[in-house]
Image 1 (cartoon, rainbow, N blue to C red):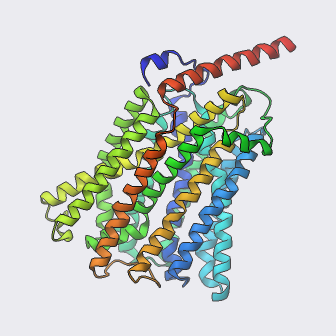
Image 2: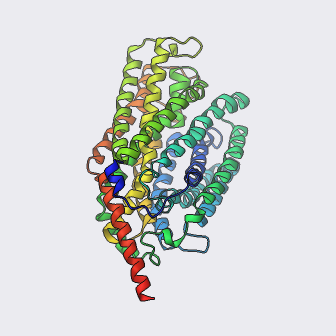
Image 3: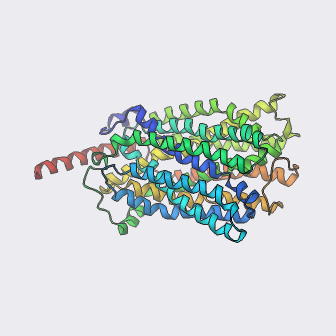
Length: 492
């Protein structure tokens, strides 16, 4: 944020660095569950025996259901004030439900009669989404009580990026270099081992997240510090209708998440590394190589965000992501032999690929990370505008729109691979690289993600919460809170 904007902000809530670091682990906890379920397509088609398009459709429907129930969960958050706080109980309950259903899905579905598998699998995914949403909604809503300091909120992105590298990059290395090598393929023993490690670490992250928000999960940090929210369920439509920043951020972030969802989809990873490059283990190794540049990119962007505001860093990162994806497509269209990209014989092509891939993944992922503290900005905008403190509803409405769009990832991937003949199963490591498969892989790995980022940038043109505006909003909230406190003293 600019110095002038920073000087105009009245800070009433500043967190310790360890609190931000610990609370960010709540997102890591839910991401671990999402990472585990990212491989459920191979379990469902390879072990349970369900068809590709059926699984793709079920996963899309489950994601849509996740979005549909989010507003109800947001309403519960905004109305809840227990002796354990507003957010802590939901972290505990959500993690237990989500972890429990994951265990049940992977241990029971394949043992049922074929006629029961589809119904059971779908039902468990629905229950899982309820638990997942209960916990995940806290990540967005809880930002409002953690800190309102313009230089602190972007710090979430640094911790989240570091943790996500551990989950997605470290997890991919663990699966591709260790589990696949140990078990031979995506079989039941592999899933059992993956689940054991993932769920235990997720539980530990949830406990640490509770420790991070514990001292802030109190009434004096809720909005204007008044007794509960007086907003009724019927009034929420008016809140949504009148909050343009929420509308634009939701559209923008959902397409950014769709971009990364398709690029990171496990099937796309198998197609790109396992078939196009001919070395699936390379996915984990490349992930390791890109860790340092990804972190450097994150540190750089967050440092800029702390000076110039979140919006500018968000949009700039998306543009760099688009250009990098386009450059990767050009690279693979120009080289004759994609398998020449190898760490066994490193040449110019391999180096160029690693540079472009690091830049693309590093910058394209930044908007997804920055969006969480930006939701807190949107919540503060609503509090300043109407006096309502409804971070749960605003965060989950955002999730609803996000789910509607990002739920398309499995269906898009399933539909595209079905067009080139993969109707009964997904492409697997060892499949022959045909021209249709080559083109499809580039489209899914880089083409569609770039188009999604273009939509994201277009929506951000109408998002007006820049550094200067947020400085005015925080100053206004501080003045209103002081007035509320003064009135309460006068009454007493």
